[in-house]
Length: 398
Image (tube, rainbow, N blue to C red; front, side, top):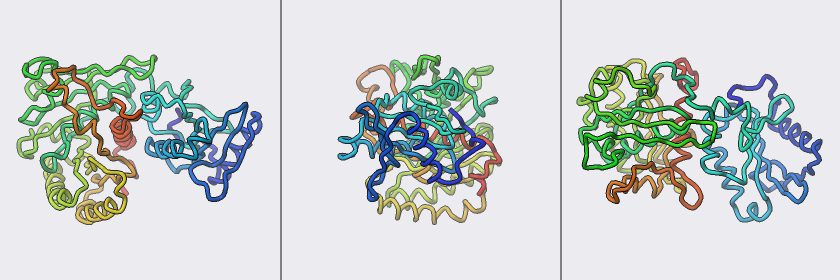
């Protein structure tokens, strides 16, 4: 899957659409333009009884999961569901590193994803091939030649810190990375959630995440306490995600000093914003006291997508509260929901039910009504962090 901008990119969205349409016409497809008032696709292809909606985008950067989800939402709408047998999504600038894994995990049989480059389409899903081997092969290490440390902090109780840490580990595991989860929270809830027997607190807490495709080995998640971490000479996992103590002063200074990234999830509710704004700022200041290199992010958890106007007002209020500090710290950012967010879902809300049922530990990536919001959202978050591996990244520094 091409991860860099091609040498020859059409000058405009309109030119890209014309080039792609002519390409399909040369392959004996009939190209049908939509009515002027129709949105959601650029043109329709017909061939041998098939009717295909084609979305063509000339984004400034790589296409992400959310942008493809928007296209899938269109395909599932009433008129489109009746009219089109499938949808093809084509972009000139490639895809985020997790897009192919997400599409394969969701088993999206009505979707095809491709990149337009030098007059040809390179299909990334479902065909795969040479362009996707780096993303789908075993033990991908893009940007992780050394250990990468990610700290997940709380702005207050109940914002989903432990759930975010565990499922971010799951997202990296799905992309081929072994992950160590370091449990710094005195309650040790993270370790309990990965134990085969929750009453055996000193037992092994780990999980194998099966590969999505046959050309990968799968990956592991291992949960360690602080003493176990110190006693290990050098774990194989190159990604270390820390579920931090809610009491900032209880997090070991030497561990805080290692963090490359720090995430602070917050709920987008009036009471949550009013209380969390100050706590987020205190957390930023505390981390920066011991760590000058870390990228720090505030992230929305439990996002309710159908409350557009309420969300807009709450986001504006939170951004206003954080604005002064964000201007003073160029490595700190509020992640807007259109970039990455964790949506509200029943599967995340009830994650951990396996403890009560004494079932095998599992993540909340199972499908509900044929889809999995947690799978899409955490892969999107993992891709966001991978895209900002470079400390000099201008997108963060602006």
